[in-house]
Amino acid sequence: MVLQAGSIPDQQQVPNVKVLPIMFSLMLAGIIGTFNETAINIAISDLINQFSITESTVQWLSSGYLLTLGILVPVSGLLIQWFTTRQLFLAAVLISIVGSAVGGVAGSFEILLLGRILQAVGAGLLFPLMFNTALIIFPVEKRGSAMGLVTLVFTVGPAIGPTVSGLLLVTLSWHWIFWVSLITLLVALVVGAASMKNVSPITKPRIDVYSLILSTLGFGGIVFAVSTVGESDHGWNNPKVIVSLILGVVALVLFVVRQLNMKEPLMNLRTLKKPMFVIGTALVFVCMMSEMAAMFIIPMFMIRVLEINALTVGLILLPGSILSAVLSPAVGALFDKYGPKFLVVPGLILAAGSLWFFSSISMASTITFIIIMHSCLMIGIVMVWMPSQSNGLNQLPAEMYPDGTAIMSTLQQIAGALGLAVAVSVMTSGAAKFMKDAPNPTDPATGTLALVDGMQSAMLYAMFIAIAGLILAVFIRRVRVTQSEWS
Figure 1 (tube, rainbow, N blue to C red):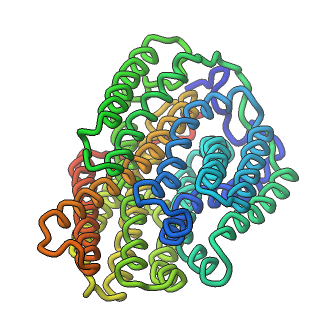
Figure 2 (figure 1 turned 60 degrees about the vertical axis):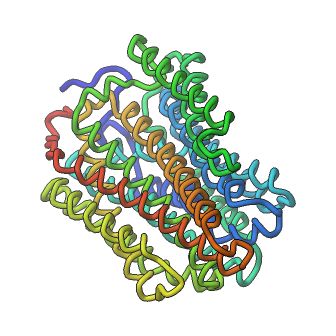
């Protein structure tokens, strides 16, 4: 295959590339971007008490973060072709630094949410850039290992979030979650400013404003609707939910139709003609939904039901975090050697099984049980994520990599926002139903039992998502790419 103008060059065409410092700065900033997805979860109880808000309101700190990522990532795929690698990297990190500073000084929920959204804007610019750069500066035969490194960002960041957050909450305050992010981003900025090279060609495709509006209304409307379900007793019958959902679905349909009829679409949906890319994207979607649901519920269960302090909660989740970090590069190497199926199918079985056990959590659940099940969940997700992602991208021609990474990254963040929002909705609905049927709803113990019942339902929902992924994984097959295809 001959590379066309605007497509991705191979490594030999990019002069003076120092892979190590470039990947270090991208991954360090990326880890903070994903760290911010889960670090705030440990502080939820403190934030609920400090700002006098509900679970449905506080979850916007997470779902709003993910929704912003999902809205911005499609634009980022085009911005890669409008601005240099160096310009985008510096802009992404600087915006993330500003967001961290705003969060660090926040004295109200609204200012805190603003800081989170600014952090998400920076991360939304960074993630597609990181994928695209890794695909360029690594040779094709090392792509599995390269994606294994990139996957570290999406496993280590969310995994260490609870541990670091717990330590900061016990020793300092939740504000320091943002200050630690800021300090780490400054390191990434300094290294990146000294080493980042412009590796992607500038083609300046037209940015369609109508497509941008439709994608924002589509993805935003759906996530907003799901996130609003638990805010009142009306649930899915809430007029605000119904209107938002209809608006989101209609806008998304119009968005898809418009993309398929444009020469230069905002999001090139023609990538969806590649079956392994579709399956890979769907499996990443499943992983993100399940993981974000679980990583919101598990810390809340330990803090609000078992009354374990934040630092201990972080330490309980640490073994699974370490395992996911250690195994991620190894999974990349195994993918290069054996392909995706022998990793993806067992990984989903392991994830679904651990979620099934989590659906029986109660006040009698032990710390050992939580450590083992969380570790199994994290191992399962690592086994699915990178192989699905790499195998799907391998089926795309080189000129479609910016489109493929943008689509996969967009849907990944939307999946996280939806997974979290639905989990909270299921949890609050289950708890409300329990309280309605309880003989003594004014008893504080009944409230705790209701919360546990809702959490069990939420984990069961996450399990069904994983099972749906398992059914889909049966159809995955290996896509082989040779270096000659890039010459």
